[in-house]
Image (cartoon, rainbow, N blue to C red; front, side):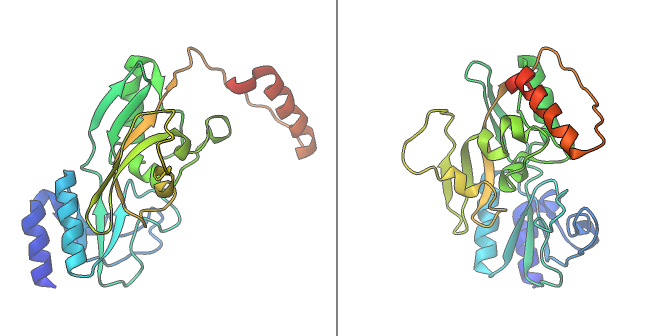
Length: 248
């Protein structure tokens, strides 16, 4: 095993490889309920490095666990407990906002970009990604796609998959699938991007995402309505929907 660790250290350097105590922050879930024992944490800063990591892991029959912000609550971003041959691959260093198209209302970002960081960049263009959730300060775009996150705008704007126009993915055989197109009206063959939305990293590691953006509201209002029974709450919801429509 020491020979394998040396290979990863040589490939990724001190900033790109963590093991021992340095890996503990990545090796447990947000609730600290299932501490795992991976051989280490690979933190590639380029797609080429990620491909090399996958190739090396495949060569030595290591289980790969892709990891985004690691704030999930279902143990999807950490290895199984006591799995001695697991490798965590963190996408946190692939964090570049590659392109924003204010006319086409799209953004191409690397998978490690944090949701709040993207939203902050989009303010300049009066645009936003119509997805919000409590972990927006740590949730990464790749993780949101891999879990097909919903958030509090889901009933209005849809799930994360509904905002994905294209993807670039490193597959288990270390090849790259590039379906990172920015077309809203795209019926060129199978909608393969949908396979990776909600797949939890089991089909490949997402490296780049092209997102559909929305106009940022010019103004918002928040109401707190109190109803003492569910039966009374449902007509209130219907009234709000009929008054505000898609703006609700």
